[in-house]
Length: 92
Picture 1 (cartoon, rainbow, N blue to C red):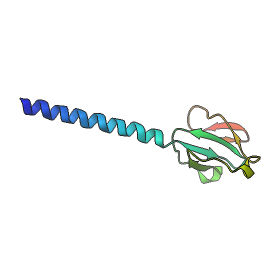
Picture 2: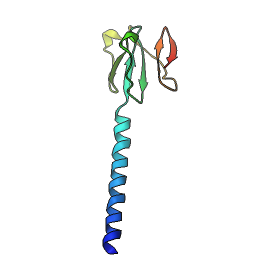
Picture 3: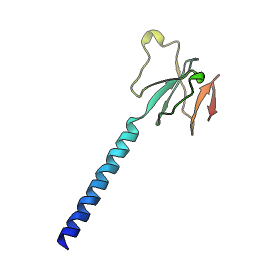
Picture 4: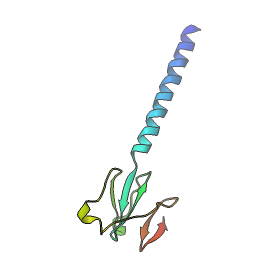
């Protein structure tokens, strides 16, 4: 009986460790997305955008250079999956 309880504790501990790792991995997948028009926004998830949409995905710590400051502007991310086109949020 002690062995069963010890084994159950080990399984629960391993599950908790795996859940913690999954949460940190998800938050680490955040990104910055910019379109051809210079609109940039942050996203918690990395999506597979169609190449025709002209979007570039960068790591979450990406920043534009001072010389590019006039080309880009930050936009608020909208709920759901989507991207900016012509200053308007388009969901997909």
